[in-house]
Image 1 (tube, rainbow, N blue to C red):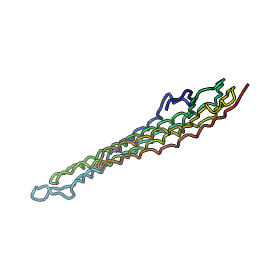
Image 2: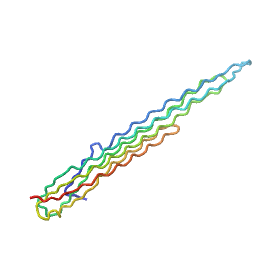
Image 3: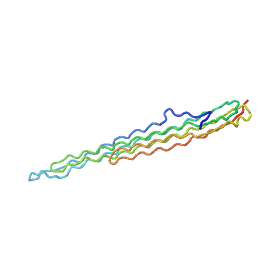
Image 4: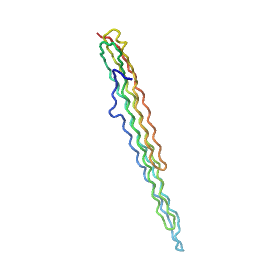
Length: 213
């Protein structure tokens, strides 16, 4: 809808809250135990204990949650001196939009598997350990509430001029919630972060039609 006069809160210069930081890579798994063997009377290598596989890597840390969006800027209190009003004048008023929530950070990569234990003559070789689980993505930030409305004083001078002053109050929209962070890679991969919560709408505006001389 087109308005003759609009009273509103300003949008944020930076429309989005900061994103969360990424998680860290998990620690490397422990090294496996070394194998043990001996030489028998026939000069053959005999395995007493096989080397063990490396340990599983550590889990990547979770991503940091995105920042919460700020509440929208309020509409400013406003006095309108309209003079002699003989035609319809439409006035709209609302607060500024809420700031968008920041995105969650990505989960850290699962740590590398540990080195295999040292081999021994006569024993089978061990294997490198499995990669650790990836970290979970950080949650998205809550979006900011819409800005509050205001009171508008509309002054007119002629009898009956108030009937031409049309007023519409619009509740300001909340920002957009932040996206959940991506899961970290690993075995298995982590979980994606949750989307942020949605803020509330702003409050209504009001008008006072006042005759002045």
